[in-house]
Amino acid sequence: MSESVRLSARLDGPDGMPVLVLGNSLGTTSELWRPQLAALGGRFRLLTYEHRGHGGSPAPPGPYTIAELGADVLALLDDLGIEAASYCGLSLGGMVGIWLAAAAPSRIEALALCCTSARLGPAQMWADRAAQVRSAGMASISRQVVGRWFTPAFAARHPAIPAGFVTTLEQGVDPEGYAGCCEAIAAMDLRPLLASVAARTLVIAGAEDPATPPWHGALIAAAIPGAHLRVIRGAAHLANVSQAAEVTAALLSHLAG
Figure: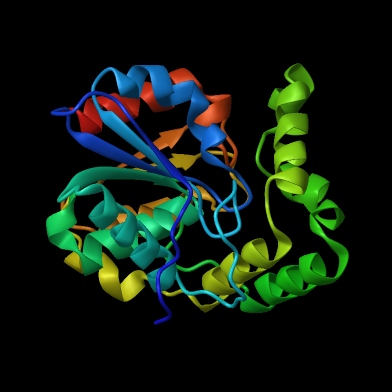
């Protein structure tokens, strides 16, 4: 494993409150969690961070591994003197959360895994995408990728929201960092780790998610002891954005319960 990267991060909230770490999806920044920040911030000290190459975090040459991305988060917790926290991650953030809960069980108290997967192939697709952004930049994939994050009905009602995520993908994400994260997903198989996750776990899936369909969440929930699955109707990949109220309520009930 390579040395950890010092991630761009922000810790908000008064001392003494329990800490909740928020992990973003591939190609987004911590702005992803804006719909949840006010509600979660009333119960937790919120630690938002950016994956390698996202939102100002360094982008060392790839490929990366999920273990390396997880080690970055552990190093961040160490730097901030946080011994244990709850963790909520969407997509790539959820993959990192699975690794954290399995590799450092004493550090993760409760876990929420949103629209994510323990193994997400085909590997060649991720290799091709990494090669494309390295050669042609983020704009070469941005609209196609963001098109999978929202249902057509939501995008038609709220066109400015997908447009904002396209802008973030093109302007706030480093191609090498994105490519390295793609390669981490290509090589990932977290299925052998699931049974060892001891943290209280909620799995959220978007009923209309083409990127990580609900069966990915069902597999995770079935393998983690005591985990619960919640399928959100009318949601594609960024369920926390398109069905913000329902996802926020589910997260509060689980994480603060």
